[in-house]
Length: 138
Image (cartoon, rainbow, N blue to C red; front, side):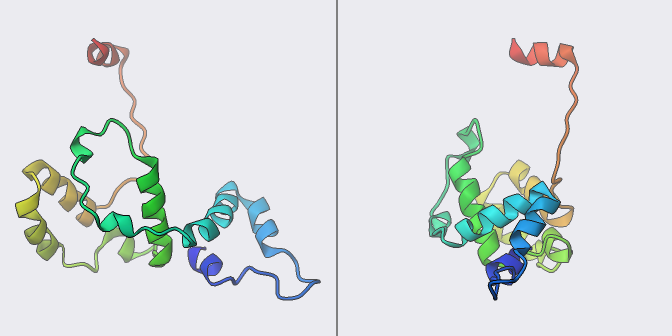
């Protein structure tokens, strides 16, 4: 859907053309959100992602502005969320790990390897006992 929106394939070409965006938006709320946000993301300058980001270990929440920048980057580079590119199987994972290893902890390196070889869940549900929650809160 990103590519269809990015290149304007859903734009009406004649006055009497069906509004494809409206039809698709009515089909699914995820389509509606994608149709609303992709054009906005195309205008976002995400070059600040190139700057070092060193305070991530102390973060207590995900920075929404960085998420927005990453989404803009993904739209710009035409992601493939349904195939091997999503899991980075076409990358040289061993070479990536070798280059990253001197710059991150062993724990972070293990997470990076897991992400590159297995992927990340799109949805994560974690059920926790009340006892565990109470222990954490104390």
